[in-house]
Image 1 (cartoon, each protein chain N blue to C red):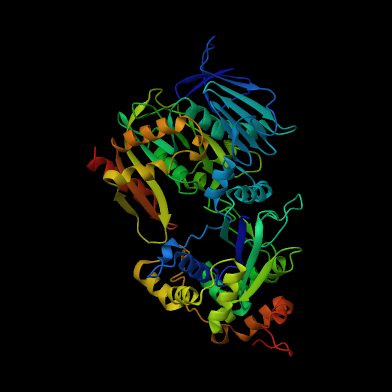
Image 2 (spheres, rainbow over the protein chains, first blue to last red):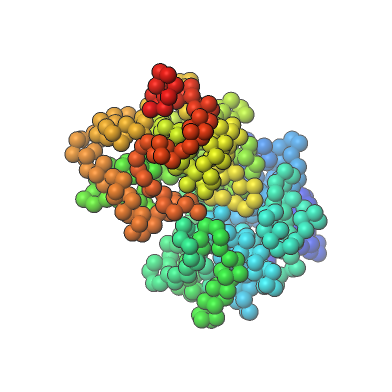
Length: 296
Length: 284
């Protein structure tokens, strides 16, 4: 089956219903195949975690109970599911960490966040898991904005965000807030309260990144938006690289840092800190949109 | 040899105070450490930490799956060959494979901080934003779990804390665990000697001057002053102040006789064992 995401043509032996279908081609950019991925890591590679190895142009990941993945040269993913595991579970980690690693290997700066289209450019919301990125994306979606990428945002050498695939991951309570009936939605994995919410296809073209907001929360009662200026801009951006550990010991690290510096010089960067609960999503979106309007 | 010393406690038992002390001790500076910068190593249940070491999102995993992986994450730290100090509120439980979630190999020891459950009830009610009866109920419920996150995504993974009594015994009686128990009440009344013992247990420098200074810099008045001045990021929602009273025995005016009786009924055995009940079963 042929698909498209991140501007790439992907040929996959595994069904990827989240992705847009594409015409067959003899020379896909990426192949996803089912096959044996050796247990016990990468011979000659470097172990970066209990289940994580990297080598030159190779990345090995095991998700215990789910699958082993081998990602090579930004062009190929081998996937070795454990016996009896469901396909949904395999796909979550294929489209997450494995695609993240593949995009790194292709030389992109990969950020942990969402990309939302604003006119002919885009805005990124980045932050750690639990910062509220998905909720914010869902809020923007409800206002009619186009979501370019969810969770993983690859940035090319021209500091443009590449569109991912048309879905966001919605927790049940978010879906309820947005009056979306989860009865029709596919669960991301069986037994989770997280749903796959398909979106209308986004623009297939990369869009220049003009704004990046770093999301966080604290115990204060008010929402704050604080611009980050000058040389202080690099570190917070670097801190939101998707799985920065994947870069350790690879030749990609220098390239990544350079791209990160370039992007830092081109964007409006601000920290958006919300109260831990009791905050208004509407207010947060308005505050970000007002900042965008002030800094076009 | 590297490894982890766990700073283990039921919530609201003095863990944060101890971490403030530890940070000041290690820092050895000429002014108190910022209370918003108490990271001696973070908390065992930090989602960011687990995700980074694992290389995939715990957000996509069921709680039982995460539990299985936690020992592997802590064991990974043995490679650094340094001694680290991590806060933990989980009870000492076993994974489905029968392995302690904190990992036997990764654990150098546990400093268990214990506090009179009558005072914990009052303090936790404020912290959890529940009324005292609900809090006592929770302290007696084996299913009590922190950061359960049925909806949305908390920044910590879920933590089984069991009942208050089970929490205490899980750590204190864990087979083969190098554990030292200190009581919050003794930390208050015999600060210097208790903190010195704890410091030695954690293999940290025990010079008198350094300990005395760290105690001064983490004194309740200092912590509370800093919180009033600039807020405290670990203050939970709905709670007015994290550093609330910093004393023991608040239950005497704060709990009703029925509430006291309920706590004793639930936890009398462990209370007696650690000197919170006298021989006739009355709270002391």
